[in-house]
Image (cartoon, helix red, strand yellow):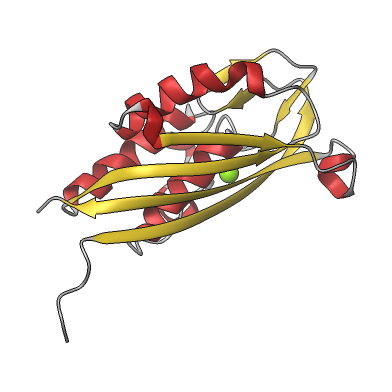
Length: 164
Ligand code: MG
């Protein structure tokens, strides 16, 4: 068998329910809104999708395996800590993050004004330049659970490259 390529890609997907009385955290940023995402951690659906994309790139399982929602250590956790832990795993395995591209699907609020702060935050966590972090957002055209504002989902792809 010939040597494997020095790059790998991964895909991540996550969904969280929206609920009243919760803070809305997306891309590591707190966004003022009437509802927030529900979860064991801060439920940052965007960072969770990125975590799964990175874990997927190295076939290291998924976020539920590394940070089980039965573990009280992660109760109310800042998802930035989860992403940092995943980046540490990537580095330990001899890889680094190349770039990530994600799409957040959510009816409200408007995401675009918050994207610059999300990119800065995520680039720092991922140890990449800001132009290696792409964040796109779309509504679901009022269709389905996203359209009814019952929840939000995020998709992400990540490329990692071998460093060792
Ligand atoms: Mg999640």
